[in-house]
Length: 195
Length: 154
Image (cartoon, rainbow over all chains, first blue to last red):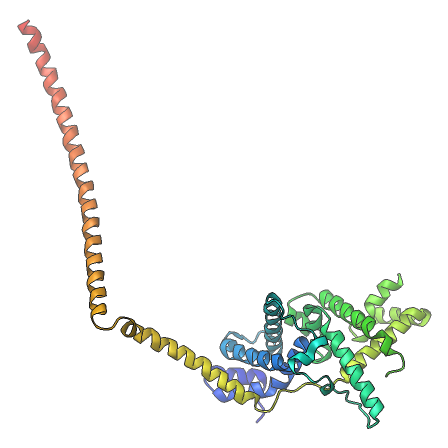
């Protein structure tokens, strides 16, 4: 039987530990993808994704069902990422950028475009493009990046984004517009004739 | 409206988050302005490229690793409770424990004695004040009687 998120939360509140497992398994990929989009590093993404679910485990009783479970979860995810980035910035010499992602053991070639063909040149071009986009996304400010990632990766509506970030629709519009414009400028030389 | 203002609306237009009235205005402008049209096409491409990036997934066994961390957290809490409970015994074995208990009793007794003394001193001052005023009244009464007698003698 497929339970809704809210039913699982309710069951967990009633002491059903298995519900927590089901929630984790339902959302682990999405949370990981969002975290990876924000931090840009696999090890950190794994660590922070687990931190998100540890917090879910601790604070799920505080979820009152006023909003959808996933907006609550994504808010938690963004908070975990932003506070981790803030801590990292305060540690001298630990500012992470995708430009030096190899230092953290990430293989730049592992992000691949879905429409990759078998032509070696195209594969190379697509990988280069993917890396360029990844790097451009990572260069955005934390707030712009998290708003952009939730919109593009999770396709959250503007209404849902206002609930996640607790701000007005105008702010969301402005953030997305700025994020896209910055990305466009960064990858403008690659845009013509690529897609 | 200047192109700068139209360009700001392109992102919302791309997400279909504009009113139908605004949509038709934007579309009308895009038909007449080459620069804005090109910028919109580029934004569309950026969107398509980002969408085409394959989602990253965690390594298999994510829940198992999470469970381990949850168990560690629980153990740590349990360990803290145990440490708190037995820390007393571990920190102060044998004679040390008795010495601390005796010191605590002495400290309480001395504090109580000092508190009691301070309270009784206050009571004594009150009694003293009452006695003093009573004696003052008595003196003035005696003085009134004595004076005429003195003059009579003179």
